Image 1 (cartoon, one colour):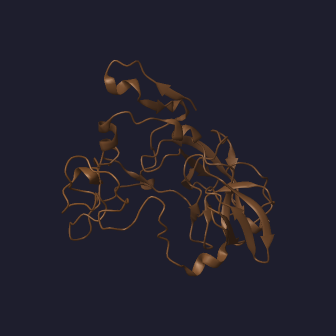
Image 2: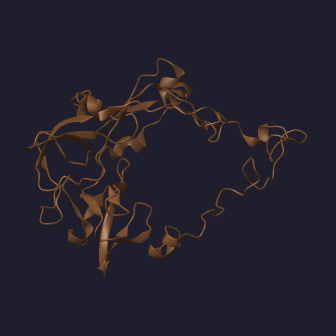
Image 3: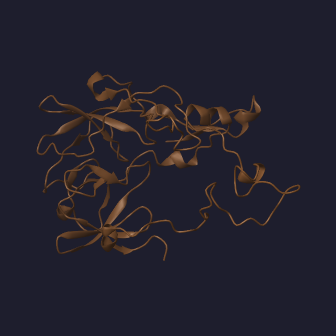
Length: 274
C-alpha cells in the first residue's frame, strides 16, 4: 500500500500525506455488524473532562470485530476488505460456509477469495488462520493474541504489529511482544497467524490542524505558556527555562516510571527497556 502526497496548492497540503485506498473493495453491507457508540468526548458521567484534548470528531459507526475467533472448524471466505474508522488497520468481512458473517482484522497478505479458519490445532500456518498458542510452531509470527482464554485478542492489533513465539515452558508460551518485552501467556489462549496489515500507516503525515479535529483530537497548550495557577511550568518573567518536566498535577514525566506493581508481573520475563 502506497503513501500518497499532494501538490501544495495550499500551505497545509505541502506536507500532508494519506494512504492509497485502492485496497478497499467495499463499504459496509452487513448492518447487524455496525453499532453507534455514544460520543463521550473525554467526559465522565458528570460531564466533567477526565481525558484532556478529546472531542467527538467526525461521525462514525463502530464495526463489531470478532476478536475471539471461536468459530472452530467452519471455513470462511474473505468477501470484502473495508475501512474501519475506529482503528488504523483494515478489516475483512468473512462469510462462513454456514451463512454467518463476521469482521476480522486484516492480516498482511490476505486477499479477497482467500479462505480462513479457526481451530484448536492442525491448521496450515497461513495468514488469517487462528489456533491455540500451544499448537502453533515456535518462531511463528502471530497477532490478535488473547491474554485470558476466551476473552478475545488484546495484544498486537494495530497496523503493522505482530508478536513472535519464542518457546514453551510448561503450560505457558513465551512471546516477544511488539514492544520487545518477553512475556509468558497461557497456551490455551488463541492467536491469529501473520502480521496485521496496513503497515504504511506509520508513514503518513497529518499535515494540518483540521485533520486532527476530524479525528477527535483537540489542541494542546504548552505548560510554559500558561499562568502559574494553571500549570507548574507557568509564569515567570519572559520565557523561563530549566523546569523539571511535570504534568499539570505535578507528576514527573518524560521517563518517570508510573507502572504499579501488578500480580501479572510474574509473567514478564524481560521488560521492553533493560
